[in-house]
Image 1 (cartoon, rainbow, N blue to C red):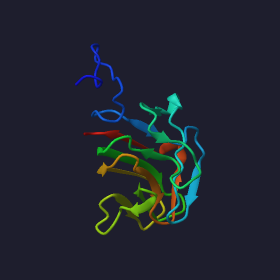
Image 2 (cartoon, rainbow, N blue to C red):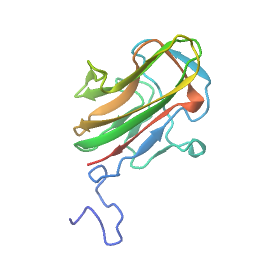
Image 3 (cartoon, helix red, strand yellow):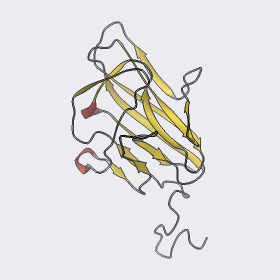
Image 4 (spheres, helix red, strand yellow):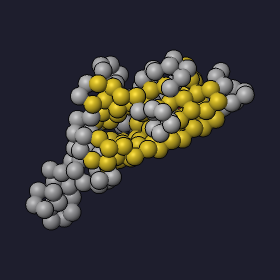
Length: 170
């Protein structure tokens, strides 16, 4: 147990290996209004420090860069089970909107919505009314794997009311 928890109970050299570590909430921080996304577009939630929006990154495990192969993504510091969730305020001009998690393992993307849509969400409505879509998923990750959000279909979201979050479970 030495090196994991010190005598006063704070983390010491254990980033990412204990449950509850590597927690984050990411959004756009400042409201950017409605955004239209084409199919498979990366959703660039690049703010984890705007306290007024409740954003945080407890252990610096979130990549805020909007460029590169895994933009605005969570990077697992250790192999384990993680819980992720997203809240998307959708509608505006689209009758269908969809978002999913994309897992990147050793530089290869895996669109893990897969058959049965086990790690994504999709909504089709007769009218383009605004709606709030929520989704959570438990995902096993290895050290250095990353995960991010992409649009599943052509979709709109209102940035001021949309965000995603994650935390290590075990």
